[in-house]
Length: 293
Image (cartoon, rainbow, N blue to C red; front, side, top):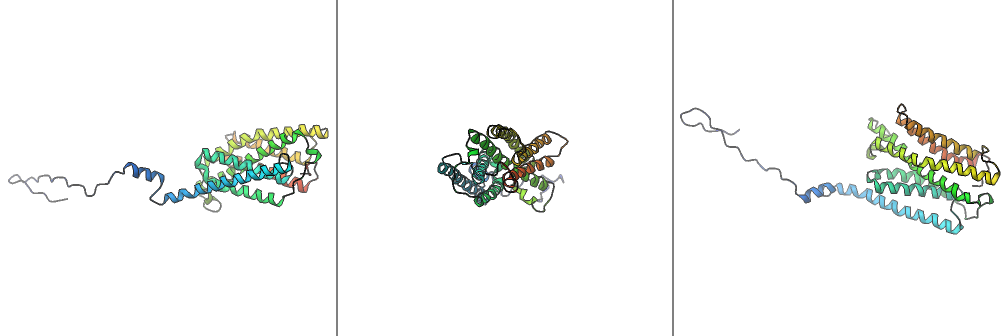
């Protein structure tokens, strides 16, 4: 407060005039507001640059991945799905392309590209270990059903791969939101909200499940045309059916309000592990009519 003089003769203090405000805050102009929104000028621009560079690198490597699959098919003069090496190349390519499509449409998901790339890299590393020279198809695969059945299986597996990653990151993010700070829960700090990631897992699985169902049916029809029976409980057929049951269980659990979302997410994760078992384990540890792969 500042002292005020009393008026002469009345003993009443006269109100002091209002003091001018010192250094009033300035209103940001349109350019400053735009700069703040873009994160420039305060260091945040650099934090936005790294995800863009990473996404660009992912786009370039996806193009190289596509060139690898195409040139392999040209060299073999057929669809590049004749062995485990070629199937892994195609499956991971489908997964990466599907993820890039979603990231372009929903940029907020780009932080999960690291985990999608990591899962893809691990499978590509396995593919390099399984590399084989280009060879013609074995007689059992020389059929129009080869393209129908294997293409559907590769498409569904590639999308299930992304669903596997999002289901795992949902568990990480939900644990982080509950306050868990032990590894791996801090990895969820930049992942979208757990509810958003969970919905993404459901959409991916709901999209891929009918394709996987068609692949199983097409395989049975192909088996009848080649071997004279639709189903013989071959290990490859059994594990394909186990995967189908687990993903059907996931969709049922997801639609049941009394089932926890974390339980459903675990079903999606285990479902993809059975697909990997069908791809690697059956070919190496079981006697199967599909061992030529």
